[in-house]
Length: 294
Image 1 (cartoon, one colour):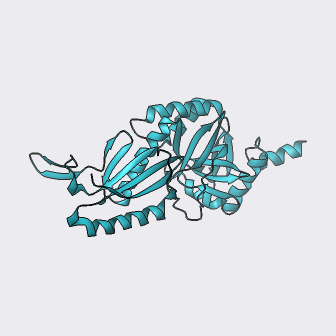
Image 2 (image 1 turned 135 degrees about the horizontal axis):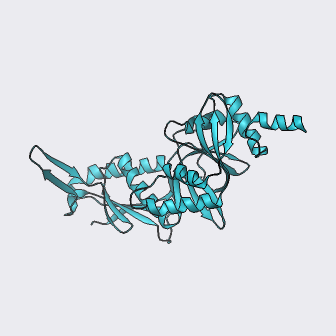
Image 3 (image 1 turned 45 degrees about the vertical axis):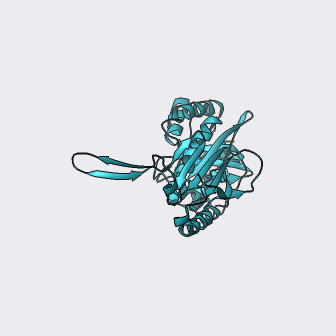
């Protein structure tokens, strides 16, 4: 491998990944120098960069010119009907990955996600498909199957509440409690501001679009583990490890709810406000009826 000509560090969730650019061959130097600048511009646009330091990064990605390496990057397969040529996305040695200047942004994100999931599993953290808001420095999570309305409910609750995520949320254990933080992916909705801090988790809502807006407390832990595990973003190698973390999380955290909501900003905002101040009530009417009976 040629010498390193540029090195950059990214903050990936709670971890640091170092990106090292290697000098291309003489024939390709002009073209790949241009590609390196484009690559760096992409990193600056979509990710959080941190200063270089003497501390060892959690993982390293080497970017190089494939033409300089006699590695098993390019393969050709032949069968009875056709032949195909494909390029491996990356090679790896423990937590050092190697890839090419020519990969796309989506391919680079895939490598970062692979690294991220492995680091999460080792450090007893997990990544959920969930949107969230921040209220009084606590995070409320909204999760559910695809199409349940994770992004929709955050839009309905904005600007009354501070949006924190609209797709992915990082959960980790801190001492005896659990906290939530943003993943390294920039949020699709640009009104969500990057935030590198972690906050205590207040409530987790499994959301359902409905003709009425109300809550139901969840008490069956097996159901909660199953539902939460369905929203786990992981891979086949780390899923069982992180499933155990989810089970432990459910065992120690009790504020789970089914939230049924209409696409009406006023009603959704009123319910979340009310539940934040009166956790025992499942609807606005519950509290009004209790006051009337008193």
